[in-house]
Length: 223
Length: 287
Image 1: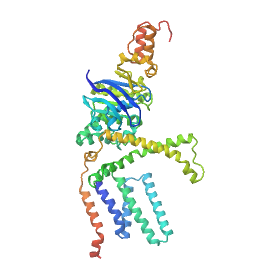
Image 2: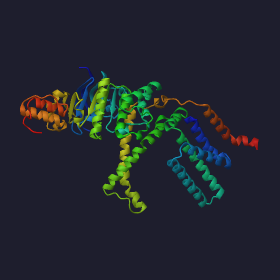
Image 3: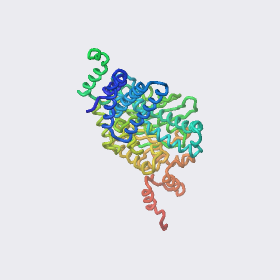
Image 4: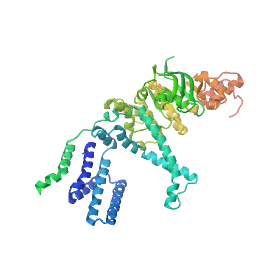
């Protein structure tokens, strides 16, 4: 059972809205469903680290709200909302290829191709950037760069690593732009990608989205 | 001569620079394996970019003269349309890869040029097979080694079936084995499809078995061009260009100078030893 990228985008956007309109119990249920889904898809260290990282961030948010004088229940609900919203994006990225998301954004949401391509290009160059940063760090260490001292001193000395790293990234981006020009990047790029058809599951999910999103309207009649 | 690239009275300068290419007149024969040599900064990469239409239509700059590819001038042509006839692999081939998986990378140009998905898929499969990466369509780029990524860049050029492929220092960052195997692959592709190759190369020893033509560039001008057999001695006479010739050819030219005899253009050490032995050289010398 695989959802279409368009459906995932809609679900993700809907979840960010639901956390504000649905009652606490429903939001907590969504959180449980998200965790089950994520662990079902990939029970790896990376996934656990990602969920754990978001959990820590949520804890910090709750703490900050408490420090600024918000009541405990408001702080907890605020943290829960944020966690559910970010996990929705994590679910989408874990289940859908970024290329499919980019294609759906261009085809269905009319996002300009250049912006959609940035999504894939960013992912494509993350490993290169990490590799470059290691090489630059090593090279500058040979020239006397040291990350000792207080935080400010370390931050300032890091400039000698950032500068060449940025220059390399700019040079690479120029080559990438030339490569894209040579290969005819443009409106056709996403149009001619293989189509991902809608299935019955997509329609069912979209109906659920509509039903839950209209909760504020129909709850008046039910309760 | 059946030429696929013809450059006539071509001059070029980048914005705010001196002339980079001066009075370039070239003919590149169909099916040839042409190697461009020259000192650093001589204008080799600029010449490659001129042949592919990137210069001046993408980079800007002032130019005079004409560049024709397959009989058509590059003037007013879109760089991507020209790339369907002349593929270019840049020195930094890593940054030339734009997609996340091998299959998408090869299919990228095809999709952009409106090929139907079925044909794009078939061409992708064949191109990957041709470069020795069969069945690797779903591989992420970081799952491939440096050499495999270079082959992938080549596959993405091959998929559009260009008649000419230009490579700018393709083995500059490779070990000798990797360099040798890439050129063997290019030789095989040339034999199979009759593709014309134009290669900028500092280490000509890698291309010895395949090279048919040489172009020597010096200070933005063509110092020598033609069939290897005809131009090697001319290049050898130029003190600045001489070190760019492979050792084997330098030895040949030196011996020709010293002995006043003509030798064949050796493609390998074995060939050289065979000819020298046949002519009585090294008799009485113990190995």
